[in-house]
Image (cartoon, rainbow, N blue to C red; front, side, top):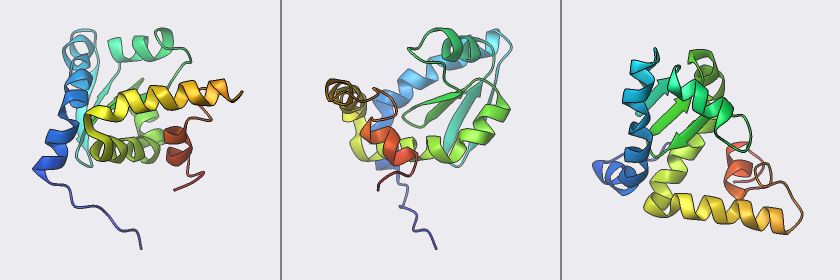
Length: 133
């Protein structure tokens, strides 16, 4: 049996600076043919500009990306496939709040400096992939 953390308004407030970054995708995705839905307490934005951004604007092509309580996906199928992984990131944002992005980028940098892969050896990604708690 999995234990779920209690989600309170404070958790949403703590992660809100990052959530606001994620919500910036909403109007661009909608006017370019994308969509939005809410799953498990997170806003999912998909298609249109979101697809373009994930395919062309990152160091690696991604099927989804989490910013606070917003998950940006290429399409609905990508979101369905990556939902468990991305919700680990949602919980990380709830834990780290406004420090999540700096900590994430620092972890990527340290992984790279140690000779590892900036994404696959990032501690936050390793947790999301279930490689350590």
